[in-house]
Amino acid sequence: DIDPETLEFFRPETRGDYLGELDLPEVALAVQRELVQARRPLLIYGWGLRLAGAIEDARELADALNIPIAATWAVRDAFPDGLVFGTHGNRDGNAAVQNADYILSIGSRLDTKATSSPPALFAPKARLVMVDLDAAELAKMGRQGRPLYRGIQADCRAFLRHLMPAVRLYRPAASTVSAPFCRSTSRMSMATTRYALGPAGGADGAPMSRASVVRSCTLGQSFPGSCLNCA
Image 1: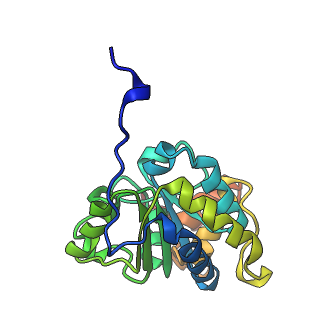
Image 2 (image 1 turned 30 degrees about the vertical axis):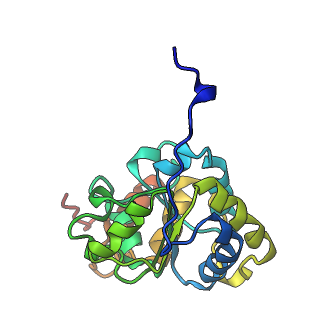
């Protein structure tokens, strides 16, 4: 029989080119300042959050900053009001990623299911900050042509526990954030507005974006009799 209490835990070595947990208070403050200064920030959440038991911490961060979430498929159920991106995602989620100017990825290794191919074209307008326990996952981004703005080798929960005090002390001004996301429709509407997912259209024969059509149908709005919808 195997006694779990006698097993040695695996603790990956911290490489010198990435920030270890001893640096977390300082780097968490820097990340918080960058988040609130960004015009189109985005949070990417992955399976590592569940492994670290940090799902609730991640929700608290998104709610505190009013920043949209793009979830990987592995944690889609934990963030049902978030966007979905990658090869298994949808137009809205991928458009948000590609138009973001600052991305904080926590617990996602950002493999090619998330970044698509080639990874060098992933989020081209964004400063990409990646939090992962595995230094090899951080290092691969540069080799694939998508260097990180910050690579933080740390446990997801430990990083979030250091980030939240900074968020509580230095929340963004009211003018820089949107209304709280109470429902999936409000979160999608916010993402559509901030990330230019397509013009509303519909006036004077102008085409309507898919997002605005779906939103109008959901809200029970009617369309002009001359409106032609081609799927």
